[in-house]
Image (cartoon, rainbow, N blue to C red; front, side, top):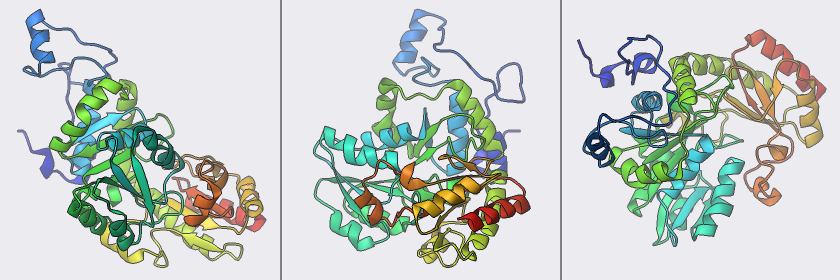
Amino acid sequence: MAEDPNTWELETRLVRGGMARSSYGEMSEAIFLTQSFAYESAGAADRRFGGDEPGFIYQRFGNPTTQMFEDRLALLEGAELCKATASGMSAVNAALMGLLRAGDHLVSGRALFGSCRWIVAELLPRFGVETTFVDATDIDAWKNAVRPNTKAFLIESPANPLLEVTPIGAVAEVAHAAGAKVVVDNVFATPIFQKPLALGADIVVYSATKHIDGQGRVLGGAILGAAELMNEAYRDMLRHTGPALSPFNSWVLLKGLETLELRVRRQTENAVRLANQIAEHSKVKAVMYCGRPDHPQAAVIANQMTGGGNVIAFDLGDQAAAWRFLDALAIVDISNNLGDAKSMATHPSTTTHRSMPEEERLKIGLTPGWVRMSVGLEGPGDLARDVGRALDAA
């Protein structure tokens, strides 16, 4: 008896959403490693290319394994449509390019991942798109930045690396009043803890490389939203520019979705313990964690997030102390990734945000003493011992 997947609980969606079995009845989704597809006749090819007959044409246009990943993630997110891409940055780039044209204006939160900021500050101006950066926590700043040609708002919340949180609903109201679309990078919150579309966003983007894979194996990205907007803004652009996700990576990400909630919730439990331990250490100047009541946007977090996530940021005062901390770690790896089953920590000023001018780093509060940690699935006692020893060494 068929059931409507939209009625399923979250856990069932993650395990069974989008399943499309072949005639062999496989339990694990099939990997369709093919570049192209055959047609029964020349007429069938004509009808498929003309959109009169359903079916796949070319891997750049779509693939059965990738389709299962897209359908499952859309079901989890509560989106009508998902389009997968080869990486998180290709998703961000495509999400903006599909909405903007020469002469348009973008408003963006100032706190962004380094590569996101490069696209906004360096790439888009080459195509005639101007950007105004604002303090993303200040609603009046968003209002004051609007121009007659403003077409999109870009929000990263929680933001990388200092976990600044934007009131998505309030900002969306400002954008929609101006006729602009809202793009939200939801990587840090994950679709488990935050639903930007339900809060008023038009488009959500993910680096599936992070929590969705969650085990450090492949790159991937996703763009999600209402079907009409997705088809209008992205269908042809993605087909013809070719940031296609490989079928193998799609399969890996499908497997990642099956355990996403279990991993993210356990990582968050570990992160809560570590954030409190770090905050109590005498060497620590400040801690930012979305699960602590002393977060500057705690009220916003309570309104739009259901968990604090697995990323912690903390200030050890200067770069030397931050590097001493990192070099003293014995279990936690020094790495610029996040969302992995393995805990890792990085020094944003010299890695993920190295390309951001120092003046801009200081505007978002990123001084050289900050460390960003992605908490994994290791035993909480082992993590506490390792981090405690490294803090002493700082």
